Length: 127
Image (cartoon, rainbow, N blue to C red):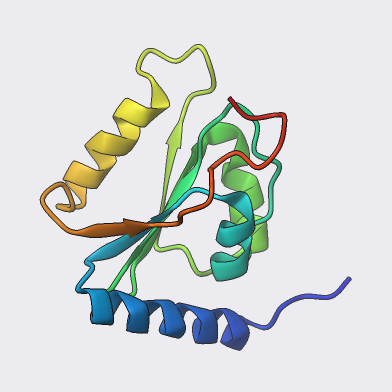
């Protein structure tokens, strides 16, 4: 099995940070699973369970995923600063509301945040 070297992910993140500096973005909010794999090396099949990565201009990386994915994250990438998880459906609070709470916790609720322009769900498994 081929593994992408950490320095390649660092190169990709540095390019993203350059774009973020140019556009004066505090963070990038990425939901497309192909883009998540490209930037941090976390590969998964996204279904109706939302997931996102937040990459801050200061270098911190946060991953929002279902609890089911936590062990997979830990085995696939060491680039994530913190993993936020939610209980699978039916949870008490909808995951998107949790994502908003986590963005507030990270003090990004009043920040300029970029996002990937492709849809979060890339196949018929999505909503």
